[in-house]
Length: 109
Image 1 (tube, one colour):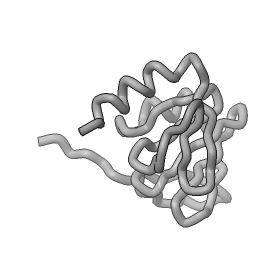
Image 2 (tube, rainbow, N blue to C red):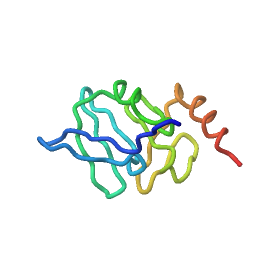
Image 3 (cartoon, one colour):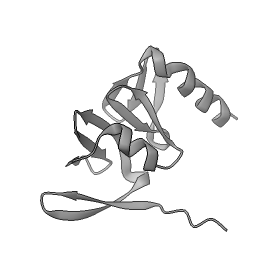
Image 4 (cartoon, rainbow, N blue to C red):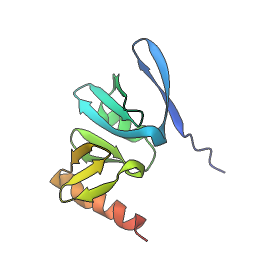
């Protein structure tokens, strides 16, 4: 039996904030910081790089751009080179597109 963790804590503004992975829409990298966008229209700034984060995120999280990780569970649709998550439009970089499409293919009915 695998004990799959469905939430995490991040340290921001001297607080430890619990975030459910399902609530994370996408994560935007800003150098050594990331902005974590969540479904309650909030965003948290966290001192970590995207590279460090992607290694610890569940499988439904995918890097789609040098500066973006998305949660596939929350993608509304894919159009051309963009992912749409609510009112957010996230560019898919050429270098990540094949990997993303392969992952989406596995999810097709």
